[in-house]
Length: 391
Ligand SMILES: Cc1ncc(COP(=O)(O)O)c(C=O)c1O
Image 1 (cartoon, rainbow, N blue to C red):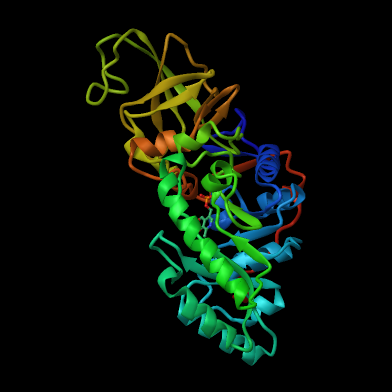
Image 2 (image 1 turned 45 degrees about the vertical axis):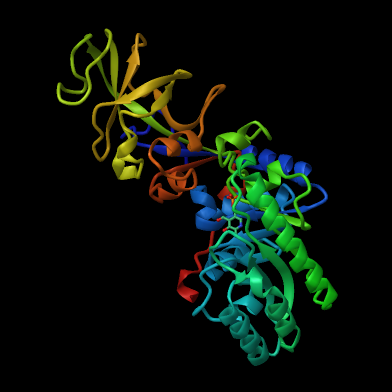
């Protein structure tokens, strides 16, 4: 599978650089040592392709994987992944035997789930390994930290539950969140100490997401859960300078048609955008049908011949328009909407910031039918077995 000028429709394509993925993983591992890396591959590896990414990440030394459903966990096992897999969300109501049959671990983020997993482990005659999550201040999911003593004590009385991990999630997107992060760290450390005092001794302790893994050298735990940084995207501008990361996904479209544009005239027509100078306009084969946000039109640039050029005018389902200034485009030439072109990069946090979105959203919005072209992709060419029919 490839994206090149010979594509008949000059349509969009997401190039996935698996070498960049491997080198980001190794950089993060070096940075967080002696902690291990849990590679978060939720949402189809943030839209990059679950199986090819997981295979590369395992080879690059990931100690564990975080997935969003048991189905994804089974998919990884069938693809040959052997490291521990934590099902972080979306498992209630799925057949519990999956956890034991496929060697998956379950996140317990509420007392209801703790009791459910105790009952399941009793019924199956073997414990499902559980990672117990406390809310230490994010205010999202997890047992609330104010009840940590009673919760941990109650857990020691559940005979079938096996606590394999203890974790929390920082409300941390970079050094600007330092004070809040520190408060959460203190609370988490208290919980870990109490668990130890009660003899719970979980094998895995984890708190850091990408931003914390990169920005807080003494973050507690023996594992970090990194997602977005693996894919070469700093979660925020503040994190960008702290660790070099190589963007993994590059979203491209191709020039379909070229037009001379006169200063003061509209492009592509007179209703939307007026050229500030004489130059060239390109009609490019990518539109909102790919789930590229139409709201970026008029606000962002794209990369063309290594320069930032304005995305102007309107966007239809399959087409958008770029003013390339003095450079006359050739039909079939590549335009980059995010990712890298030569030495230049358009980061997701830059685009997301223009439309009040999160960098996480953009690649996960991309339609699955946008061709993914895997570079350095020996792993990607292995057959992939669908598990949809067994769940
Ligand atoms: C519990 C948990 N940990 C870690 C991550 C990874 O976060 P990031 O992509 O910011 O590294 C996620 C992402 O959704 C998550 O839900």
